[in-house]
Amino acid sequence: MKPIRMTILAISIFAFTASLQAEISVIKVEGSAAYKDGNKWLPLRNGQKLAEGVKVSTGANSYADIKLNSMNHTIRVKPFSMLQVFSKETKTDTNTHIGLKRGGIMAKVPREGKVKTIFKVSSPIATSSVRGTEENISYGPDNGMLIEVITGVIEGSNTLGRNNTISGRQKFVQMYSKAQALHILQDVKNASTIQVYGNGLTAEEIAAMLYSDDQLNSPDGDLSIFDNQVQNANINLKIIWP
Amino acid sequence: MKKISFFYITFLLILAITGVGFTQDVTQITFLSELDNKAAATYGDALIIFKLQSGSTAAVKRKSSSKGNSFTLPGYTEGNLLTRGMASLMAARYLDLGGSFMYMIFDTERYAYKACIANDIFAEGGSENDKMTGPELIEFLTRISDMKGGK
Image (tube, rainbow over all chains, first blue to last red; front, side):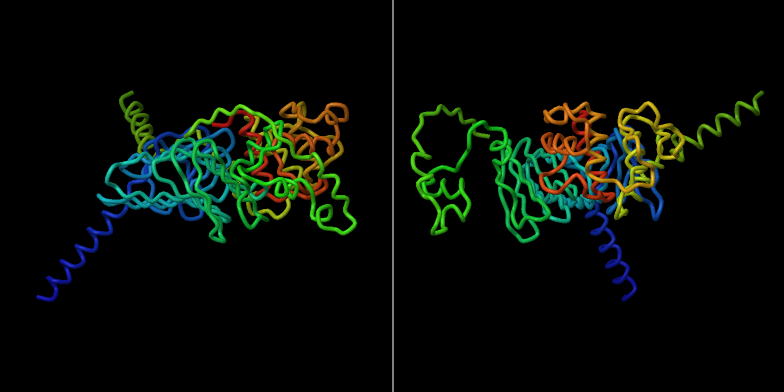
């Protein structure tokens, strides 16, 4: 009796774990793209099935489109990138985790009604969690991790657990040396011809942003420099909600 | 005749089944993987990666000449350690970069570095004399690839 039970148990465990594995497959390859098999890099081919935990790398002027599960969650691996893919799925949920060592990806994670979706992209300094989203993600030691939302909502969080939820054209930028991500409107600030401040700041708060602590707090500091610095102005804004 | 045809068909079938393609060159993937682990990149590494970016697949095997490429810097040998300034000057010439009036007047590493910062290729901070690591060089080329309309 015991051997029969053991056999049934073994078959059940095998069937259960087999159903957890999502099918990772290559949709399209252009240029030079490879996957790691043992210690060797081998060329990727269109339609190829890849194992869980596979490492993929692309060269110059190259890309690879990879389908991660039956829900049509896909990524485009951009030039000079290297990453590792983990993907599991059942009928009720999908769980995808991508470790981005360098380079960039464009992820498409279409929303599927009743299926619980976990889709995370991690770099050594931050993690992006998405649902029903398209996003561009890149990572490098100089510029840090950049998450740019194309559609939907994502949450970016750094290794200290500090997070930002972003949408629309906002970006999450986590630099190596910073304890928290840059302001989500950093790009808008950089591109604007006038200074952009948050809503509802007092004149003192804006002055604090404009001038260093020395100028503000030193006993010898000349506070008259703040006179007439902040004035009222009429501006027209066109706000497009994402 | 039949034997020869059979041989060719079998050969082609084996190629198709094993998926051996002649179009893909994984040597550059191996090169990038090795560069990724380098604590200090050299001018030679930068030359190879710039040549790859400009479409030369023979670059990794060191079979292609650097002569005539806009990004070649006179006065350096392939073993010289790569600085941000050197990489910036190579990039500024390769991309025909604007963004710095001073670079347009003085074609030097210092102002090329400023032009690269102005164009978001390098992050702010640091100096043109800072040595670059392998991962930094790859990231640098990723930015250049984006500017060139990377996929």
